[in-house]
Length: 491
Ligand code: MCA
Ligand code: AMP
Image 1 (cartoon, rainbow, N blue to C red):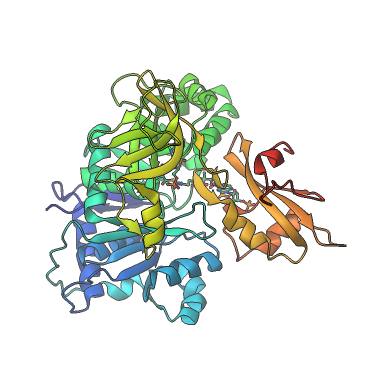
Image 2: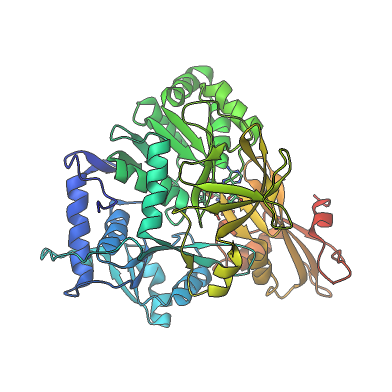
């Protein structure tokens, strides 16, 4: 079986980072060196879980592919996570070894020392003594990605080599990836969007990836004007930021940027709903008709507007070939009436294996072999349109899925807070933005800045409430449960 790294054009640039370029041959050699070093004489890592804390860089690819080649399970961690979150990732997966680059290694060392996790640098494992690699069967576990949900702690989503291959090839075929493609990568590399849709598809197809450690709109636009990229994938928030940036420029500066995006072969939006106004603004500015698609950490990509054919604003298109999608009503019956909405359920080789060490959550997420996404959709004229989610406790902010319960759990530990409800409120830039409604203890005061400061080290900054409302009482139903839809009216 071929590996996920293309080997047909060994001298072609696979990765570009700053002024440096790395050919497929160079990347492959580093992967072999790392895999040999991490095996350290063993035949096979035998699904050892190895975590790594590395930003978008050639080292990231070396470690991810090296672990895969040596038969381990790769656990890419979020470089922006707070220590408490990293601790959960490490302890819930029973990690013994963590690989990092500076300065992240020094940052995480105290936590790893506390947990008894051995930390090392990528360079510690680059062996010149290349050893034979194990035969890793397709059904073995390859990757764990943490995702928030309706529980207060993120769950580890386990995908196999077969799942990953299916996720990649589905997109490579549907969106006509080729070795001529050049794409910027500025999305975080602890989620499917960055890992699979951009990085892995590119490396599978023999394309070139320009790595950016973080989103830099001006640099991105400058490179676009130079004609560097022909392919672009982002979350709706990034299109909003690009639109605002371009509209803020004088006509002479804006024109070549608009033309550059317009000249690309494809611009994709996903990870959250792309508002029709943004779809239209992008088309008006650049001439590009955005291709919106729908996916989830557990299933990779499931629905997409066509590469060739009509792309509809506000719609996520149709199932990818090989992905079976069915809407189910509240009685768990397939929806048969056109215009009737239902929960999206999926069957496909792209669907994950399990939540790590959580058979209960795994079993609850499937019904009769279908993975139940919790997203509600309707089919209009053959195109799926996402209507919302079955849980109000999931918030999508800037493409990140956040658990209201996780944030509430942390905020409740604040000494001034007696009760709190967290919810997502509509926001032009973030899609949804995190808001907290709190009841304070007797004689206490609290404002949003003080709350944010207190949260440092406990929650990633993108999970922090952007708005805090203090109230005397939270609305509850007869069961004592907070009625969040009522709270939305406060905003
Ligand atoms: C940053 N901030 C945010 C977010 N990102 N606040 C709310 N939601 C966010 N998503 C806050 C920071 O905490 C900081 O606050 C301030 O904004 C500036 O941070 P900075 O990092 O400079 O912002 P940015 O670079 O403009 O980041 C925005 C971003 C980023 C590029 C849109 O959020 C991002 O990369 N999102 C994509 C996430 C993603 O890939 N999701 C895919 C998962 P302060 O100033 O107060 O400190 S979904 C998935 O994989 C499925 C399968 C799918 O369908 O794709
Ligand atoms: P995650 O679990 O972080 O992978 O996020 C997956 C969730 O993002 C899905 O369950 C949807 O709720 C949402 N999502 C992804 N793509 C879209 C889209 N194009 N439109 C609406 N929601 C989306």
